[in-house]
Length: 118
Image (cartoon, rainbow, N blue to C red):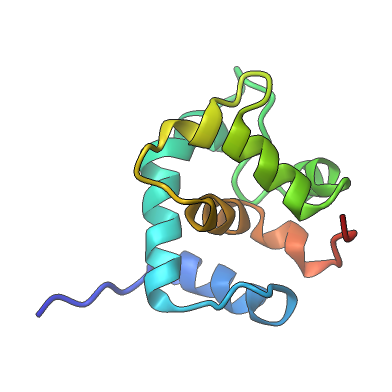
């Protein structure tokens, strides 16, 4: 039996979200979100990628600006695609919940403050 255990940074990010996020946080969700980030999101959202204007992993200021219209708005754009963001981040196997988990993983520091309701 293999157990999925999130990395320490992912576990800390998920712990920070526990009070602010309605999404149930579990080791399985955290490891899935991190895996989605690594395989589909990091190409544009990695902090070292300065060639695109996407909000970067754990950059609270960039994510707060992007989340200003509300989390559901950002999720809808990620699911449907917007500008340079391809629909579903080109993750054909992802569900809307997976996309939400990946966004919450990337935006964890920005989620320490309330997000306006849509």
